[in-house]
View 1 (cartoon, each protein chain N blue to C red):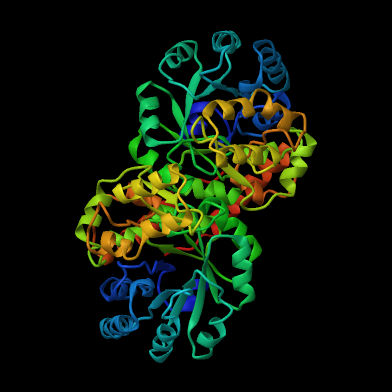
View 2 (tube, rainbow over the protein chains, first blue to last red; view 1 turned 180 degrees about the horizontal axis):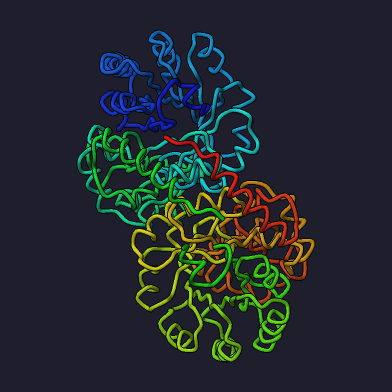
Length: 312
Length: 312
């Protein structure tokens, strides 16, 4: 049996990335209802908001779901207390050391998955005792690694180095790309951008329309000195670029980034001043569908593509 | 029947990338003898040298092989005359418009493949009448595109846009990664770095040893203003980086690059002052094998991985 299906008790080894501002209870419960693992994006939620989303998810589905939480978050203690109180099935941690929280979460029966972008951090996560890792390639949206390893090269390297299950992320939006990730050795996939483009995601309609009209080369990995992030090359990005070409200081860059840029863009729909985090695969996505239809399309395309692969 | 096998008259849809300084007649004839398509790297050959390599290849194998040639090359007319005189089976063109040469080559029975890194240029190549394209992802070694599209996102986009066969390149070194590329929709693969690390390649032993000891994050896509190239982060690269951090002009950069840097590193073995072009997948390659063993390993790993893919 597939190790991810077994670990999470789900039907398909398809995890929905717990992205800030777009991954609320509607998206999450629908992914879980349709056989994947939905994941709330706690990175954009106050503790009270997270609790509400968890409660709504539990009402909407009796299937397991998860929460993604950046470990350097100021409210981390309070958020973790809520997660443990509600015994959420799986926690995805990122941006910090998994040493502090892994055993505590596991002690109350919660599975822990850490998100990494290199073999080095994958090995550290395994040593910290996590149940699995998400290995995220250069093409993935949002926060990313400094090594710039793409999914095609990262997954085989991580898989070779680790004994625990590996979820592939970055550039996966269809059944064919899921099949490719599994061929590389992944035990399952984490899909982000494609679920941003679902009817149930809380991404603003302006953001969805913007992605529908985007093409190759429209995203870029930037802010590499502070913390690399992949985003759309919109007007806000051009301001970042201008600071760079004027040799701005890290502080000037921080001032421009400010607070609430991702909310402004992705949730409130300001395509000019907002930060639009999305993966490179945005250029390939040309529809907004229901989660149910997305899941069915991915599964049937995967199975279909599998049968048509030639022998050598 | 697979379109690449049919187009080139070969056993496996595996093309060896025609890389400068490493792809001479020994490597090329062995790849063709073992069922793939070997490709001479004319980008580092004077016309007379190319003629010698073609003649030696023909003596070593009666199977088809190709020549890779950058179209902005100064000796282009003379090189093309030699290729046409010897009726080489396939020409791989890059770095320039395929409009000028495609029909001329095809008129004497030569197949033409153009190397691209974006859908935009893939469509132009198709319009120019080429027989196929190589779509090369961000992770590939040597010259690359500005869009930074990875193999995982580029192949499905190019495949969706084109009617002619698509070869995937970038990050492919094993049977599993070949299977992944085919799952993405590629009709075949072009493999570079793995063949640099063959016994028959003319890469200097120092370069091969350097790659054996390399790991994730050791290559970087740089010189983005002039023409993006992926290379090892060695001492020569650090000089480039230093120029950048001092806001050097394009001319200063050109002066540093100079001439013969790739030869110095890859062919003559100067790991300090030479330019070491190689793909990101270098971090995964930990052996130098014969072409025959590499081909057999790729084919058997591909077939093996294919049988173990789960159904959803």
